[in-house]
Length: 404
Ligand code: PMP
Image 1 (cartoon, rainbow, N blue to C red):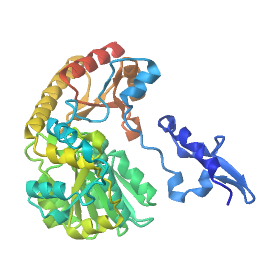
Image 2: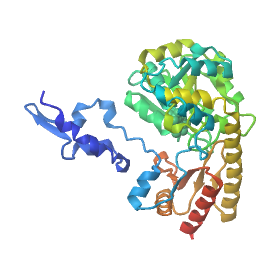
Image 3: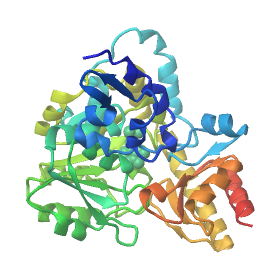
Image 4: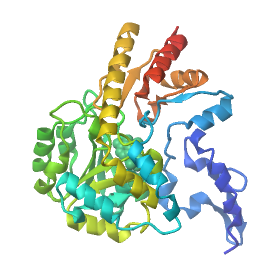
């Protein structure tokens, strides 16, 4: 084997992946292949087959990137459903008090955090798993359960990461379109086959913001064959205002293969720390622990999350800000005669007469980062997260300007 240095050259190229639609492109770039006695080695030939068809995850544009590229200052980001209030103050205080311990590896079992979560949710600690964001737990579920060519059912559209993770493990994706922006549980039941291994349900659904009622989820679980793993991703459940929308944590005992996911990234404002958690039967958490990296939830993330769980005041403030913000934004969009999709989360969809891509680009020019929904297949829609009151006003002003 010749040295692999030639391939290393690709790494800087990957940093511009945001612009690229498909990974095959880098087969053709200089430095993206090496020649040896056996011919030309391209990444396409070297990578596992299932990887070559993946597309890079398109994250919301970071503020620093926009400012660097367009020379704009004071831009705002309403693109990644983050908490505009910042992190939980209790988390900041705890992190500040614990910096001097970061020379130690963190507690890989996340003992104190799991113990607190166990108390809060009334579940045994062994049924709780903590990860490097709930993203990691999504990957753990797929890693332990999915064999190549088994099927995974995904609503369409939904959180893009499910598709990416399933694809990277060689799974076959079966999609079930939403019904009026909501996840179609009867449609999913119809799509279940003998090859179905996992079903992902984002409740509330990203990117549409619609949520399912507990009775509907319960009926759905009862109708499933008992060998299908169901992941109920509740990344935004804290925001749900409708009292009929309750967490599926209470359904864990009625369906042994249910996994419920939560995160500290949204309501608790800790997205940058990367910490999320999940509930499942002990046999599933044991399975995940077989493949889990030992120190994935870092020390400060554990410290911050532990303190944030006590910050009820911050959660209350976040929910009030979100609901007031939604009320303001809905009323302004009504005034402007624009269509939108009401939400149970801190983000929602807006239909724009300019088209999603063009609206996204022109809003960037105004220093406002929104999310085009084209990659989610929602033509003509942008998604915005609720911001601070002044950010919401700026969004409306900029939208009116670009539409005029
Ligand atoms: N699930 C959904 C539905 C999400 O929208 C997100 C974040 N965009 C996540 C999970 C991942 O959250 P985390 O930051 O905990 O990895």
